[in-house]
Length: 264
Image 1 (tube, rainbow, N blue to C red):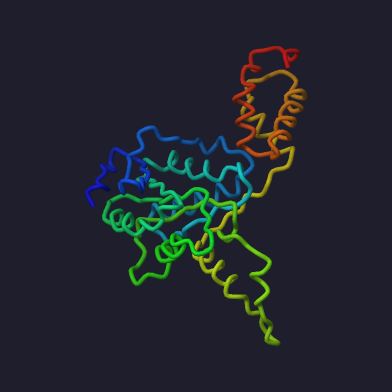
Image 2: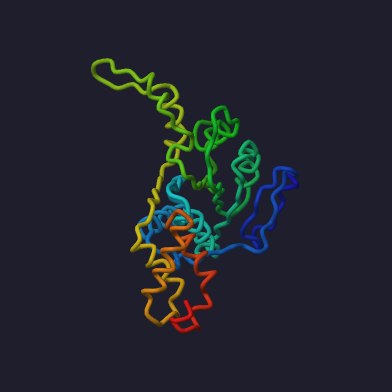
């Protein structure tokens, strides 16, 4: 499709725009330094290993990064592009409400001599969402073999990508030897099971939150006790401790790096 015609030797990222059905080249890419991401070393190593296998033509998995908001899921994907772009990695971002066009994007990308991660941020589905089945077919389930140069990475706050209700379990039955899940539960699992790599991102404790804050204020050489008091107060007002909140706090208080402690 001509609306997908991109020079991938000089461009590293694109975003699908559903209103015009084209891929928009991203000129100002929000690259992230993986070394700047704190307290997710295990997740970082696993996603890097998977991506390196992919780039070296070995078997690799589609990946689901799920967990608490603001814990670095999206930043980790951005960091992969910064780390591996010189190895031929490219990223195409697609909004969750445009996944029905995923097959067209894959048809185009499988003929491009680069390795692509198709990235969907904050992925989730409501009951009856037509994009749900479109994604299932792309991950696994089509008569066409998956493209060897494409992986699908998604972030979500939901482990199974769909709302989970207590009523979903009411139709479960036990036949004396095995528990048989309800159809609703089986449908939820059928999509998440298609992700071979599932990484969880739990909420962070206060000590880890302070470590992240300190990583932003690394040039602040004075006593950090009051800095932590301010950071804790800010997180309380926001209702969550996270890497995102620590970064937002830094943007507000960065002037403190050059000020005396009494200026708080």
